[in-house]
Length: 281
Image 1 (spheres, helix red, strand yellow):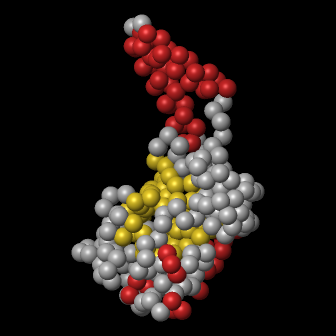
Image 2 (cartoon, helix red, strand yellow):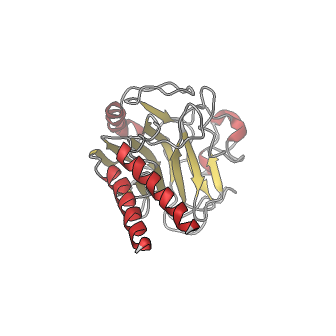
């Protein structure tokens, strides 16, 4: 009987936590392709405007109705191809790296690479000049060893507290095959909020953009699949049908999750107390 009561309370807590983010409304849902950066610019600008004004790259809690973004401008040559790119580079306590975002390896992915600039003297576009199209000149980003990774958000003011965001938009290039590349967004409880397949184009080195905006900051984690042909980090791609890399990331200001309502907080406390009592009983 006691075990049944505990299970009932636990299930109620999980249900209430999960439904809090599922109640959010999806305001913007964008999936497009374009042959070049100029053709994609209007769509990306509109998405940026919908997310809000651009906040600074400082380790502070700025306008929650604003946005942050990455176009790889703050990364030096020392962490660009052929050197590995650290996934936590933009979760830092100083300008211009304070963006509140991290990239984490999943699956077979072993790390990340950022393409070199012309001025560095290294091959651009990972050595595949002409195979990809930068949206914002001139760097590109890719997972190495695998094609999947996660995007996590953190409080820009302390870099350790997980945060949520209202939306995320990502630019892809080289999506030649449909049904492979995708973006999935998840809430605080791990519940899937939406999944979108990245649209493909028959044109070589075309650009693709996927963007999602909710009416509340409910996105805690984003899972991305970039093709199925992995960059191996030695100037080659592995086997597969589609080698894909990425450019700009645009996202709503990362904010700390809203505390549980008083009722849920009391319920959580009661559950902890009940579990402790059961251990002593």
